[in-house]
Length: 268
Image (cartoon, rainbow, N blue to C red; front, side, top):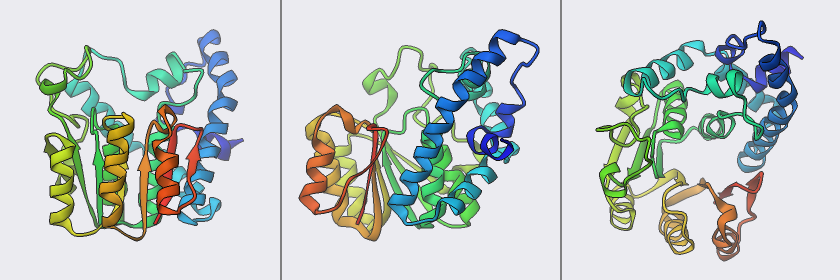
């Protein structure tokens, strides 16, 4: 059970469960099995996509979950930038655990793929708060190499979300200790993505998480794919919205690998 808990939740989160509150602790334990199944599906997804063994992937995940300093830094960034919004994951996991599973499991996929593939260059679109960004960057920092380029619209241009903290840019959750590996580029991806890829020449990992319309997702896939190195990885969120991801996988002759019908990946 200890290993299962280490895989499922960060130690920083496990330590926040209020066992004195019987209702909350029982609720958390009831949902543990749901969350664990999602984490196990994520591990299998990363294994299928990268060829890494599940045992190796579990070790990386446990190491991340036991990295209390990482989660403490992330919480500090939340509280510094957005003190009025109780959004740090331990709130969801312990005070109001979500029926759908952990707030963290999909972000952990970014970390694991980065650890397994050891990329030099990652490009993602749609930075938003920067949750995925932080996990990419943490893995790059541990790898001791690599940079991440995030393409996003300026919050003022799209309105973002009604609860977006006033005056904050995209990726405001990235702590200062990780910013030396991060490049944020604001603008329409139809313009910034082709230009950046031409400048870089080749990339190792690409992730789509911006405009989820059929036309735009196909545009990003088709634009990024030629620049991926052999063995490179294309990732995409919100693939269930329509058929763009499946159609593109057929277009390039690569088997689609999916996670809970929400997240997808292709290996070049």
